[in-house]
Image 1 (cartoon, rainbow, N blue to C red):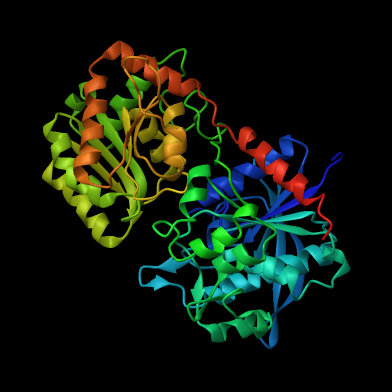
Image 2 (image 1 turned 30 degrees about the vertical axis):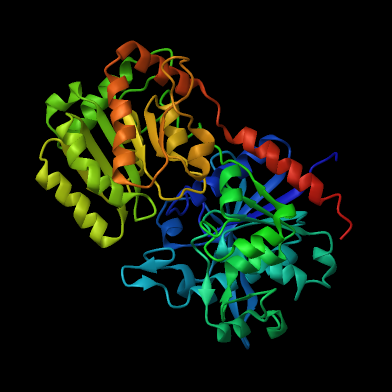
Length: 489
C-alpha cells in the first residue's frame, strides 16, 4: 500500500493529558511512532479536569455539537491540541460527564454513570469525525470504554457513506476490566436490543463493553504475544476465553514499546544527575539522592536498593511484596515504594516504613517525577504481578540500568529472560509460582549477583543498550492496518 492513511486512536486516557496506568502511555506514544512511519495518526479522548488543569494549549474547534444519548441529545464542545511530537489530539468536552476529580471512580467505587459517560464519548467521536470531515481508514479503540465504537460501525452507522471504508481495531489492555452494566442501560446507546444476545453484547445477563469490542471489531490486539495466548485459557481469560478463541484468527499479540523520549536517563529532566551506558557514574549519585529524598538512612547508599513502582493492588503482587519485605531488609537491602490504590494496601505499605525506619521509604500517591528518580536510583526493580498483559516498568528499568525481578507471566515473560552466569545471557530474574517463597528466591538470586560488581555492571549496561522502542511495535501495527485496508468490506 502506498500513500498515507488515517488512523484515529480512541482511548479513555492518554499521557500526558490524563493517566492512571500504562494504557495512557501506549495511547500517547504509539500514534507518535506511527506518524514517524508515515501514518496520518490522531488521538481522541474526553476532556477531563486533569486536562483543564494541566496547562495544555488547546483550541476550541467545534461548539454545540449535539450527540444522541437515550431519548434526547446532549451538546458537547470539541477542542484540539497536540502531543509534544506534533500528533493531533482531539478532546470531547462535556462538563457534567468529565469534569471530575478522577477519571473512572472515587474512593467509594466506580462512577455510577460510567456507561453514559463512555457511550456518549464513543458516539460523540463518530459524530465529530463526520461533522469535521476527518476521514478515518482505521479507528483504533482501546479498552472497554471504547468498546461500543465497533458496534456503532456495524449497526447505527453501517449505512453512512462517510464510514463506508472505516475499519476497526480493538486493543485489550487488561481482560480484568470488562465494562459490565445492567441490560436496561443499553437503550441509552441507541444500539438495537436485538444485539443483546450471547453472540453479541450479552454477558451473563449483563452488557459487557469489553465483549462488544471483541465481538464487533475487525481485528483484536493485545499488548504482548504471551498475554494474547493466556487470555484464551480458562485460567486467564476471566470468562472471555470462549469468545476470544472463537476470534483467534483475528487476534494478535503485539508487545508494547518504551517511549525513550520520556524514559532515558541520558535525557531525563526529572533526574538530579543524568547518565548513560557509556558513563554510569551518575546512577550512583541518583541512588544517594533518592535515599535522602525517601527519608532513608544514608548508609543505605552502600547496600542494594530495591524499587517498587506500581498501582497498589492484588494483581500487581502487593501481597507478595508485603510477605517478603521484612526478609529483604534482614538480608541487608533497602526498599523504595511508590504507588496508590486499594486502601488496605496503602496502609500496609505505609506500616512497612514505620516498622523499618531508614530501611524502607514509602510514598503513597502518583508522582511521575519521583517514579523516574526511583527507576534511576534503584539497583533492582520488583514486578511480582499475578498477571501482567505487558508491563512497561520492566522495559524502563532496563534502560535505566536497573535489573528487573519479575513474575513469568504475560509481557513480563516476553521481555525478561533469566540471567545465566555461565553464558552471560539474559537480562533479569524471573519466578514462576505466584508465591512468596518463589518471589524471594528470585530476589535472593539478584542480591547474590549484585555482590559480583563486574558482572552486575555488564548486566546493567547490556539492558541499557536493548531496544524496546515503540518504532518496533509500530511496524507490527502497520502490518495489521495495511491488511485491513485490503479487505473488501
